[in-house]
Structure formats: C-alpha cells, structure tokens
Image (cartoon, rainbow, N blue to C red; front, side, top):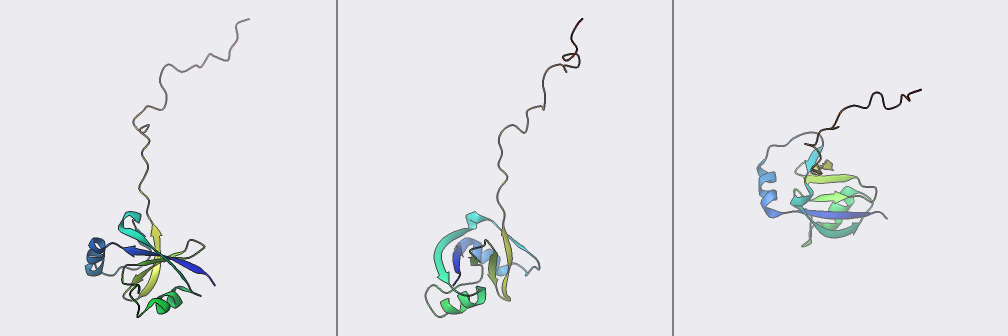
Length: 113
C-alpha cells in the first residue's frame, strides 16, 4: 500500500489560506509554511483523508499529502487539488559580475610566420 507524507500548514498561514478566495489550477506552496507531520498508508489521497478523519491528527484545510512519487495535493474545501512546491531562487552573488572582463582575444589563434 502506498505511503503518503503529511505536511501540516502552520496556523498563521492557515488563517490566511482559509479566508483567501478559491482559485482553480495548481496551487503554489512555500515549504517554509509547512511542517512535516508523519506518514499515512493509504490507497489514495481520499483514502488517506478518510482514514485520518475523526482522529486528533485529521487532515484540515491547507494540509498537504505527498505521494511516494512526489505528487502533491492540498486539502481544500472542495477536495484535494494539485499543488507544487515553489522553491526560492538561489542567489550565488555572481549575478552582478560582468560575463567577461578584459579585451577580446581575436588574434590569439593566429601564429606569426
């Protein structure tokens, strides 16, 4: 049976998420807004939700399930919708450095005879 990783949305983010208007399409998620909360074995996303329902660790709106294959679904009022982690762009510090410095070597390959 597949195992799904549970990511709980932090409470401060959850309140904003609950009151935001519903959007269609893929939801972009920031990893910093979630905390790992264990795993659940289930045959699918809705089966995982059903197996946790009625317990202290039940899934709430804003919580995320991640499959073994990396597929991510976020729990919304209308069900589970596709989501994607958005990772911040890594700055190396080389963005401001010019591509090349100095004079071009156009005659470097020509050998005097």
